[in-house]
Image (cartoon, rainbow, N blue to C red; front, side):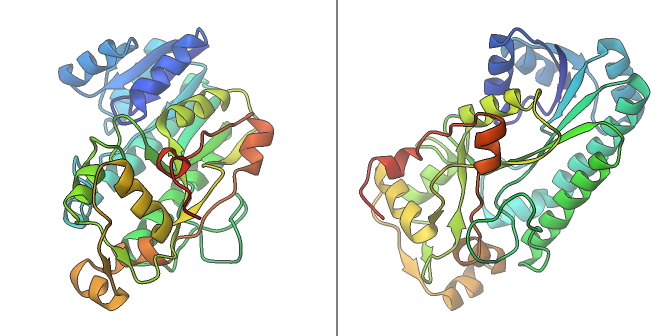
Length: 307
């Protein structure tokens, strides 16, 4: 199959390209600059120079390649995972996702692409009992950045779902593994070793994860599944009070500090508190049934007996 990836230089780009090529797909990728083109070529995909924010350039790229499917992994996230840098990057990230999505969808209709895969969220579901399946709403009434992000993902999905093509929403958990923030040599690993990431309150916010290689494999499988949304998350959602101390041990850090919710609200802000205390885990049964999704156990929890 001829495929076009938008956002191939992000965390998932290299493992996704490798996984697609292992299954004999012809892989092309949008590249905004010569530097991006070199990164795409190093990952052994064919770069096509076009800025995702330039509608005419996106359309020309798709006309040139004539892909059968397009995979949208567009983001503009900062190098460092801190509240300040995430806030500073939020508007650029929103613009890239929103306008990039609109430009791709407009071009797809004109070029005749039959399938569209879109990066979405498997960890911003509204609070409720048990694990959330794909029919649950996003957390529109959450802390400011989480609520804004939830509305943004919902709008991206709505636009794609009404575009008249086969559409798959890839609702990933938090990426971990090589090249991500959540790795021994990643930004969060470094912050945890410096004891900058505390367990907040009871640490009851439930996190879902997906190894970057498992995310790539599931994305590849989604080229042939029924349209719809899929939670691409691990089998063992874990509260912050469980995963964070285990992660600290795995990256050679001392136990993380503990602070109250009120202290965290004053020093770290409402979004950090929401992540630590309000996140809701999600269920992956649909992806396991329909994509044969088999996520590996979360590495650092698998090496502990914490429950």
